[in-house]
Length: 151
Image (tube, rainbow, N blue to C red; front, side):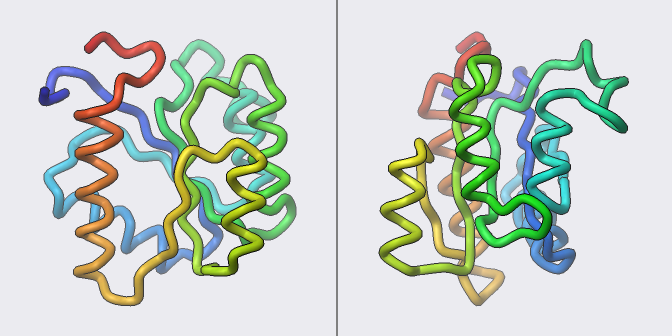
């Protein structure tokens, strides 16, 4: 089941500019031509999702269909942002994939307790990142039925 005719919106929250560039390149390399939006910290992530301040003009735009979230970000970290997303009845239906440098068992366990849908440790090699993005693309955009998208 291919979703080429459906525009899937992916919101990526990561404070590292190099990681954002690599993720953008990896998604491009997998042939993903869906909408990618990037924010640099958890505070901007929450303002984006709630359409506040500089994101107010997006009020009529649909929310993202999938969030990729780094845990270790400034201002509001990924754990706090995840907690806020899952507590908000307007946002808690959006699947969240944590993609972080951490491999700590505590981070993995806590992320799932907070309601994350998947936990991925960022790879070191770009080829491995492309492979992971390909799996995300296949699983989340072709296999899984996302809320609000016609299948």
